Every structure is written in C-alpha cells, then in structure tokens.
Length: 105
Image 1: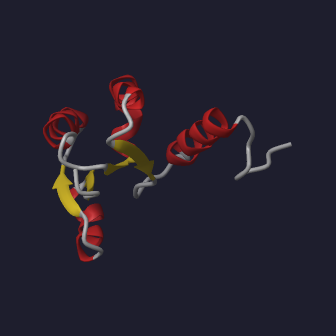
Image 2: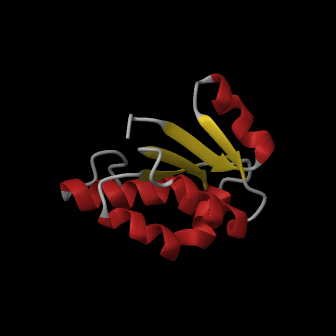
C-alpha cells in the first residue's frame, strides 16, 4: 500500500474530492457502496465514505476495525444527520479513553 486515499459516495457530492487528488468511486446505494469497499479495501489506506451510505453499513464497516488498514472514515453528506461526527467521537473515545474533541459535559 502506498498511502492512497479514496472516497465512496454520491457521484455529485464526491467530485470535489477528485480535485484534491482522491480516487472517487460513485455509489448510488448501500449495496453498490459495499461492493465498492470490498473491491478497493486492499488498494487504499484511507477510504472516506459519505454518512448517508455509512449509516446503513454500520455492521459491515466493523470488519475494518479489526485491521490497521484501510481506515474507513464517515464524512457528512448533503443531508447530514450528525452520524459522521458521532462515529468520529466514539472512535476517539475508544482510542484515547476520553472525549478530547467535543467536551460534552
């Protein structure tokens, strides 16, 4: 692996990431996203996944937690419900044992 990054999500929403040098993989639904993740998992170290696809794939994505790579990161999409932020918060708390980002008292 050479540190390559990719994004999987709605075709219109992810095109801006192409300009930043990420490989883009359009997926119109969770089935296509799952297939795409299976295909690209060995080639990319970091894979961003729009939250509209990540949320229904929560159980499937747990398999990526067992290996160091790829790191699959949920990012907010057009109709963000806060799922991406919540997943990030839980990962940080699991890794560090404390909430250093959000400081919810």
